[in-house]
Length: 596
Image (cartoon, rainbow, N blue to C red; front, side, top):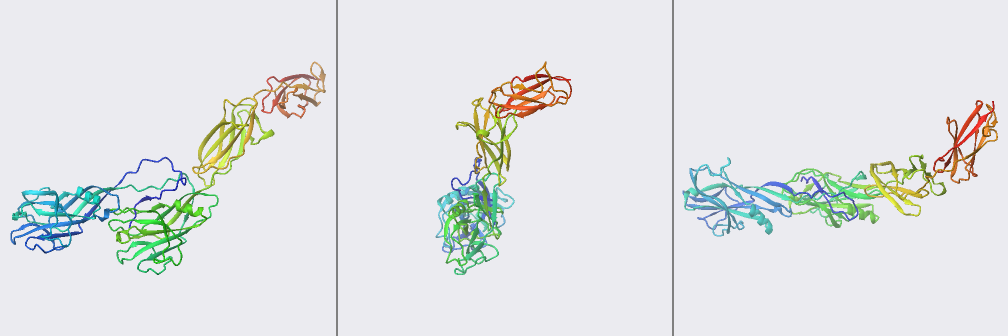
């Protein structure tokens, strides 16, 4: 039997999945089918106790002037195809077809809904004529009024079918009789085959919850399967048959069920996001469907039989009964809850059983392709962030550190870098946090998502960031389901105050107008912070040609060696540099004269 294209789901336990915003509510599914009567009969005035159940070649109506016979006819519709489907009939049109030639002029006939007919219906045991649904009154010439090219008569039976279904009736009966049973022109021969065109809607199929992104997945085939048979109740059949089959076989009448056992991999720290069973049908639909059920069952063994079944624990989903043949295609069920419970209990296997919703009805017979897949969707959280660094617009990036090694920035705005990777290759957002060293939260922002992760950069500024303050930041990756571990805290300070102007001294090249040294004579120059503890180095240049940077010693001094290449006056420019890279506001200008 062909299966409905679509997705049937079991509601997932709270917290299992995190679907996105719900879309518009699914609309009912429109359908249409053509029904035929499952029984017919006619009654005879001249033989009032004789039943003509499902007999004869015609449905006779009215007076036969040659024999004096008067007949009435009845048909019955079987509504069981609509049972348990939730269908709402929106339109039903019944068509009676003429089975004899039109003979010039004709009297009319009436069409009624009647009480139930059966094999005992006769003229003397006639059903009640309940509601007149229409007719063709008076007399007319051929062709009949409303002629549609098929010489047939149409009647609206929508209300009759809706009311019968509302009462839970599985059958509804209709009768035809002549307007004037004494008029030989009221004689009709109608076809025993009645057609009813039915339009209806059925509830929309439930949808699988969305699993966003690209989680990792494992596609599992059954480790073992078996088919049990009611006709062979004590015969084990593990792995038996080419195609798993459930329900009542329309040829043999045998009833079967199947079990599939799946062995699940060790997912360790992975989080299971979903588990989906996918079935593919093989057989053709028998006009309408009774549906089948998907269950979690007890463990399948080599001894499982009809008389020694695996326990049917709980229903996980299934297809509904349908009043029509559904489109072909795979169908997927959500079995996440059952898989999660198994894994939580430490079990690495699960058995899933299939059976027909109505094992007495051949419309519940299904044949499937072998090896239905159990797909596990799982996820590892993003990795721990790496390549952490901080800098500013005026200071190069430095690696993440804390304590006395923390960097100081010459700006109020910090530029931070981090790299976050996702082992599953899914979308990753990056969450940043900034605090004071005392733990006061300054900001929290999220960037992304980025496919598979990568490097991200953020610039942070805040009015609460002040000169001389010390701050910290950290970062972590987040995918749609899990947050990764936080990075360690990284610290930085802010220092926007320039250091003091340095002091310069040289014994070889004293300040002008004194002369010293000479061309090619190296002279050492000593730079002093002048007592400013923030000074960490000095930058100097002769005539602003080439700049050289030297670090300060513990006593706040540093030395540089200069070798003039010609005699004459020179000017040495020297800046103090603090821990943040700020130069002194005013440089030291040291003029000296190279002896000729």
